[in-house]
Image (cartoon, rainbow over all chains, first blue to last red; front, side, top):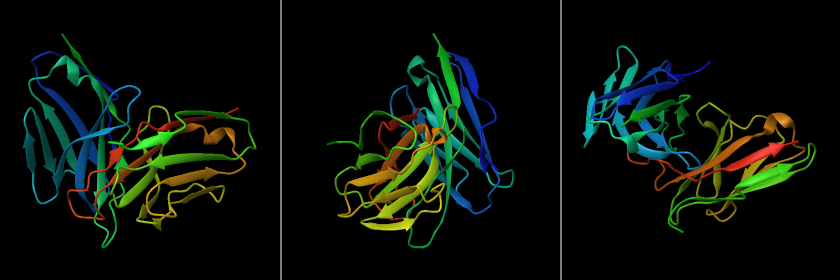
Length: 115
Length: 116
């Protein structure tokens, strides 16, 4: 029972174009969402996050959109660069009073940006 | 060190042996998490600590798995009587706070465990 789903295992985009990575979730208790980027032989690194009280968060070339009614979020990268080529994980967490936020991850999308 | 450090990076063990995986979190980070990642999947939560207290171990697959963080810093994940299905990447992460919206977890490079 996957609570966080990334249905596209891979995505190829031309350099300079927009990359759109999608993520769906089923647990309505999730209220905080994150994207992690992972290069080969490295651990995942935090990229950007969004709280459920917002529908958009932007940080430079990266924007995350949240559609709570559809239980869907997406990561937009524009313009895409070859260095963005990595596996992108969507993650979500639920607010647990007094507790740290354990993350539920999707299975990842391999983004390849072609020069 | 500057980041989360895990050792060993690679561990090959025979079925039935016990293994201990070590995590050295970022200095001062309150929360420490253990995740397991199968090939082609995202990390799956195992357990976490706030300081030395184990807050949630609901993700541990069975009682062969245990974790400790006795002094609120370094943590050890122990797997007893390893089985082939335990083979995976084991990832440790730490975060500075216990909650709130700005406590993103920082991950280590992981320990690749192979049980033969």
